[in-house]
Length: 205
Length: 205
Image 1 (cartoon, each protein chain N blue to C red):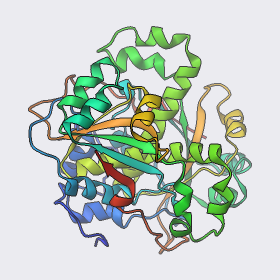
Image 2 (cartoon, rainbow over the protein chains, first blue to last red):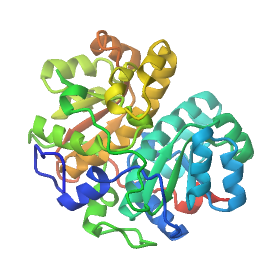
Image 3 (tube, rainbow over the protein chains, first blue to last red):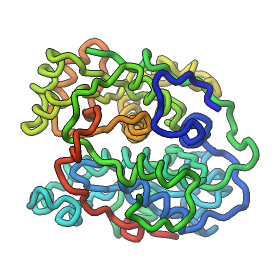
Image 4 (tube, chains in turn red, orange):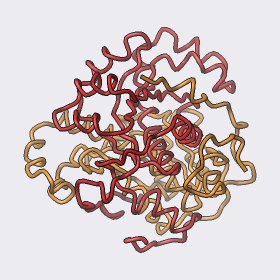
């Protein structure tokens, strides 16, 4: 159960709050149990409902599954992270799609013309894509946990080299890697580190 | 209940998946019911456990609660968003703290010296802070819903002016505003817009 006294009642069961947040840990060691495409799709099918700017949904996901693909990705990870990619059943390269505007007629019919207006604004689109995609990364970590998978995000990597390796055609921009699987034992590498309390992060006006 | 066929079993109840993701909506109209500090703290006390780079937790929250503070914020919002701030019980200015490294001895004792190493690297710190804080914004939207609050994120605003208005002393960098309250009726402004399917956002290698 929770290590935190709850200051207000939750709308979800304590066990669920534990599973999604309070006792969930960044996984470091994984079992051999495979991660199925159906599980990843189920996680996406939750995370996709999280709000993004103009419903733009710019997050893209490269599922790195084969040994060969793992080596291609490991080559661009910072030292300690290369083996982490090799030993996870699946790693997701989370990326932002600067061409997200191509879908805006469908995704945001409330305001016609967004697609056309953004067409010539490549730099604006990339900034928009990176911003909403990172917020979506937060939703997806929770979504993966909701499907029963452990997530291990990390961003010690060469982003430009990763983009050249995998995203030459799509133009996607890599943001971070999330290792996904089932935790082996404690499987967390570190003990739970402290968090900042509400009065350390919030001010009221 | 869900409008999505689940491709794999969830680790949480369908009703919870609905509440947090599938039927949750970006709120536009709110009731008069107040949002308490205890509720906001409870939402933080979930979201704070989400993983961030080196457990850096750079997200900061300005709780805009008084009419006077709402006017100060509304002055820096894009046209349609000014009234949205005035009519929400509470708006949160989510921000990144480039001085997050001051807490690293406590937050990430695994690697000593992070604080010192980052001390002279203001630009690196700001980029790190923005990135992890946006991921945390995703956790916080889910956390607010878990507490039974509706969230309405928006980022049509003048960030530099907002920073000058509120963050002159702290150096926080505003990222987006999240209106928080209890939804009035349907309260969503728009119908639910389409989402991209898994095969539209994911590739496997």
